[in-house]
Image (cartoon, rainbow, N blue to C red; front, top):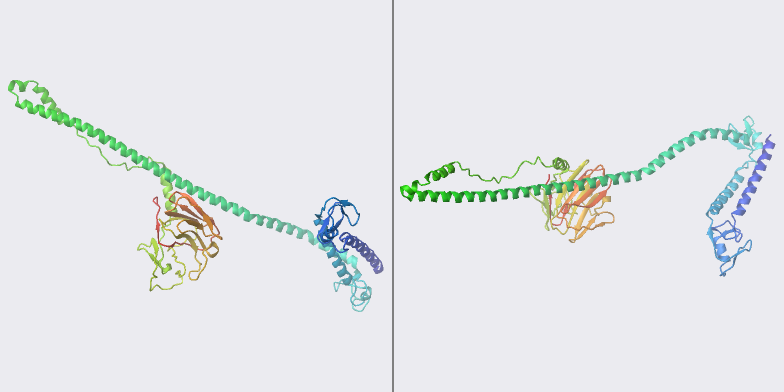
Length: 479
């Protein structure tokens, strides 16, 4: 039985060797007789190394012959054969495997073919090993039988493995799609936020214009009534002056003349007693209940978002001076003395933090920048370095918009993103949506969007002004 197995194994090996030899021939170059390197196919269908066929045709300008079939082509046509290149690599690997199998298929002790398998020692043995003292009492079977048995066992393991592999593949595919989906969700949320605030500003502007128009109409109405009443009072004054002159004239007349039409004069005087003298009130309307309800709803929404920012002197750089109400900060050339160098204080960049940070929610605040030529506003995370020199970028925990040299605006990304602002902002609005990971800047002067950072916030964020002159935090007029 062992002899039969050896014969079958020999036949199988011969067949495999022939197939490998054919593959090696197909994967070889007819010029250099080595494995093809960068294989290219020419018009007749034969394949060569790119370098070999290039050298073969080196001195030719037309009628390029095939080194194998001698068929010529008019043009130097070389098309890469990537599929054959893959086959070349496979042939190389098979040759290495063949060499390894040849070395491993012989018994290292007796140099005989390993044609049997010992169950107890779980190893392939030769016929001499099988009858030796070491394996004589062991269960030994032909190698092919053991191979078939273990192959069936392995195939039974294959189905659950493939099922688990498919499950992991599906999960991995789903996870790989999530960053793109997340990006779309974040962008959708960012656009929603921008749209909401643009609509918010638009409605507030409309309501403001409506209120001002209503006020102007009320002013014109009162002025018209004042003019009409003044004219009416003027007419009455003239009538009374004429009546007084008439009465005085009657008093100077003789008895007959005075008594003539005296009854009419007395009736006129009697009517004067009941004459009403009215004045026009200039009190303005106080009841705004006729105005659209959304005006008050919008004001309520804004009040919930607005952050009343005050500055923390314990974090202020020694060249910064805070106002008494801690709402504004300015840069001075002379450093303030006797300031304790606490871990929270900035000592390199002239910065100062707000007293309260943000770890969730939506927040909006405004910074008065006026006509300053240098400034930077934004936020930083709690763990930023406050002592040494660094570049304030999102990677180091800073998200800011800045102005320098009077007309150069940029978002401090990597690299800086230049900002083209048409109307110079005198006040900058900042809107933070912590969960959405967005920080948006607005030009309050013309109600335009300046820039939006998109990131993932994991720490407490602090409002961070960096002035060159004076900057002031201020509440919006609708707060």
